[in-house]
Image (tube, rainbow, N blue to C red):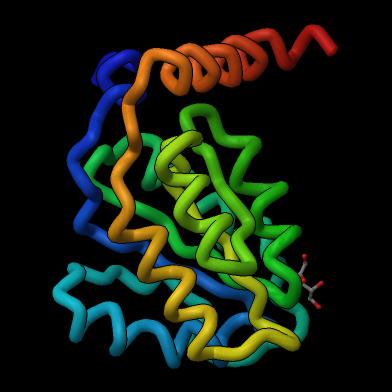
Length: 165
Ligand code: RB5
């Protein structure tokens, strides 16, 4: 699909692809049934067990690549802080991953930035709060106003020029 269509798509993504490393697996286990009960088609791509040696960029890449090629999908990534997952996922073209700690960030990152992945903090963060934040992210549409589309296009431009450094 053309990048432009991606930028102005206002329909909500109904297919959730979720992953976590060892530090996020507890929150992932809590969120998956909640997402299913809320009516989302959920694809859990790991981790399946706690392995302190697993690496968050592997999960970030898996989810980010999926979201980048599937406009019906939205990603949920969880690591200890939420920061590493965001850094790794945002290396994939067409991905706009937002690390959200509260409802305001979740709402704004959808309305203004058309974020297609939310990253959450698995450590020192209330699970019920994480669910509230994720839910707002998933339920909030992109505004699609020209100023927001223009700004997102500028992100894509930076992405294209990235290799130049
Ligand atoms: C793993 O210990 C931790 O570093 C990872 O989950 C994440 O917080 C990185 O950003």
